Length: 449
Image (tube, rainbow, N blue to C red; front, side, top):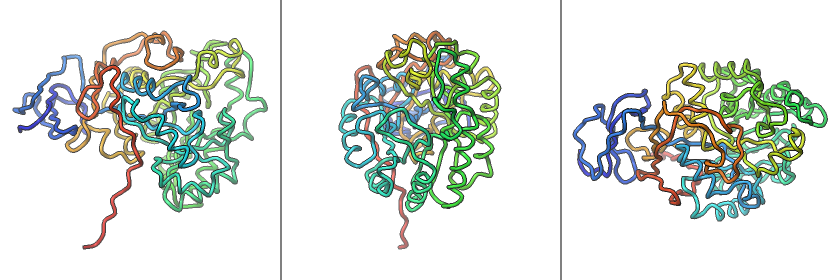
């Protein structure tokens, strides 16, 4: 085959697993995948990967808090997308909260898009928010191009993004059912959270303040709502394995479970020292038994995708209170390290890299309807990453691309070094800003001839 811009040869993660292959790229898309790595393909550039390298599709992280505008000192599109590219992520979908204004109206979406325009190193899409004041007007935001909606059932941590009570959640589900909208629910029931949400330097006290019963109660209510409406698509952000039976194979149509395994699969409660508020997040990091059960849920398909929930803040906010878990900001910066964190644990458990790629690229792309990416196959975008899966790195927060040098992975020894990331068939160079702003894909409508 001729007329190609690029051929990459070597070990490749394909939809049916990892094997030797040659991948031909033309006009930013994958034109051919040959089953022999030495297949006679002519291109302007022909490159053979190193013996320790694997070509994977660019990851699609559908849960990222960029925080710009309004809290750009926490993170911004320039730094977040640079971190994404450094971690093999070629598409992110930005959360609606922590920015000011939050993305809860078409006008606020315009402000968010203006902030991201021209500064993104990778492609960026946007979630909308469902809060009490915009219920009944979600369709307008959906039509403006958001990929779906995020809501909280417990306080979000920022005043401008209030949570929904049970009646308001039901109203949102009714509204979304009318246009098959996607809803992500932060699943903690405030009635099951002890008053005060915990405080002090002891991690055990903070953990006890966010019991898994709160997650289970919230997920059960979401499932009841989806059964009642019979429409919409809903995913729950939860960390307790006890939630998974609610969201297993017998769940109602469209109701899924989506934990945040860049935290849950690589960290456990025993690894959190007292006063180490860099580990604070909600729902909290739970014990190793819960971690093992989450991996079992990934293995059996109850959980079918993995994202980071990159939720950074300034060092001052993360360490506020001198190690008091009741005072410090709750969120973990992990966008650049998501692949390495998950792959490190997967490799220890005998899980192949191809399955990790399926969770972090193919399934996430499918989740938000981005069927043009997330896999190495003819016709897909040539969003790619070159990874050395057996190479190790020791995390130094000061060397990450995130805006603030604080992360729960500080000092961790991880496997899986991303050596290069390609966006639409071209490598992402430091300082380049070629990322596109994405609207929700509109499914094709077939009409009779």
